[in-house]
Image 1 (cartoon, one colour):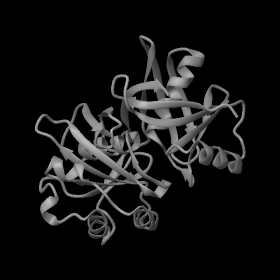
Image 2 (cartoon, rainbow, N blue to C red):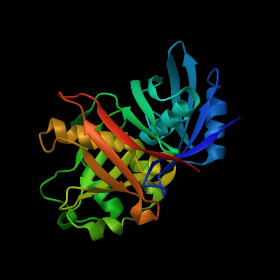
Image 3 (cartoon, rainbow, N blue to C red):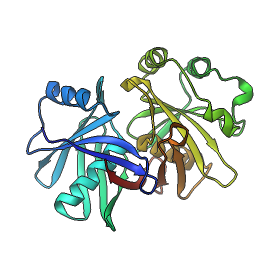
Length: 275
């Protein structure tokens, strides 16, 4: 099976989150898609097939299907743009509903911007934050007192915990099996630890134990969830620049802009490079 290997949200010619991209006349069966995702070994592999003027899309991590994946969607957008020309592509995801991705050439590279499913946020389930803090070895003094931990959604559920010290973010570590058990029990795709710098740039690390991966270097779905939460809670508006993956040695950069209106989707853009 032909699998394109692309890194989405690259920081210039470096980094980005690798995704497998499979474009076929029809989607393979679930077992085949899972086998391919496991063999590719990236945090997600996306499968797409044309249905009229739209595209049927499913996402698989090495250990199971994922409802929505931002970096794989951006990688898919670049692949579709290269194959069919720049423009907008309308996707029907199996679990998250309609999504749009727009691709444009940028010199020898491609850039893509997705528009996420509707966003919403809520207080985490009782005990979830305490368990997450224990998982990462955090104390109350590590938390940013201006941003309470929140469960945010823009196609997938993410627990977002803000830390007041950038150096504390850099030391993130946790047990993969314990993290997977927690995330699956409470229905989280990732746990996102962030630090908001004085210049407004958001530094992020995303634990993706639910997908069998210790950490994502760039997480478009979490970026969309963050921007949607901040808009709906009237915490911040306008474009948000997110630096992720630097502590892994895989520098990535994402740009998220929440659309107007409570609960609307979020645009997340980034550069794509061929691996």
